[in-house]
Image (cartoon, rainbow, N blue to C red; front, side, top):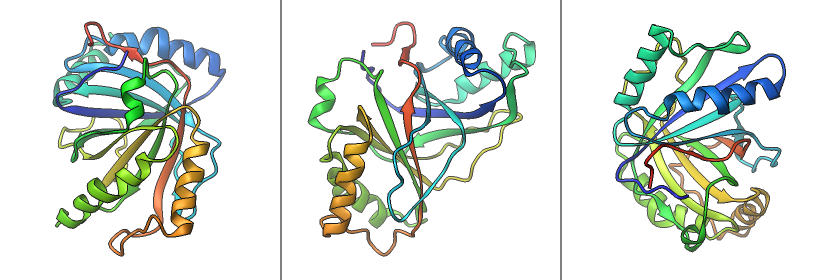
Length: 240
């Protein structure tokens, strides 16, 4: 299923672990994610790891480990309070193989979602791959936002496999206790259906040919993360 949103916000939880991956995966999919599915605003969750896609020139690869993406509709404040309550009450117990502290990000949108024609043909998000691009958004962001939404994202969405893109900044919602919040000025998230390789090659071609030009206000290098799925998309109960 492909969920619809009124106000899409995100929570990324990045983690590393010790021991067997199968144990980690089973705990995440069968215990941890189901615990948060009834939280206020929850729409769905999916897990990712860094893909072996070769970085693009001008980017600085970032690896925070395993990435759990929780998609919410509306403010993440209610979700935060529910997770905090479960942690403090002992209803949610993090196993010893989880290495703490985690890195985590609450994100709020600064653009509407951009969809390619392929998006309407999707039946599910299970094979969704992500490209995260971190950059510095200036305080006076009008020119930056206009370029991103009217020029850059449409160019990227023309690449093979792309289905959706949206821009985010760090939310004003207070971080969860005991987590480290990476410093993020602006995060563009590009979603593909299937492998990221063809997309990467097309973006590289556009950059080399001059079809895609990065303006002077875009400061290189960008932080970049290619992610591949290691779980299906888990929809929350009642998600449409």
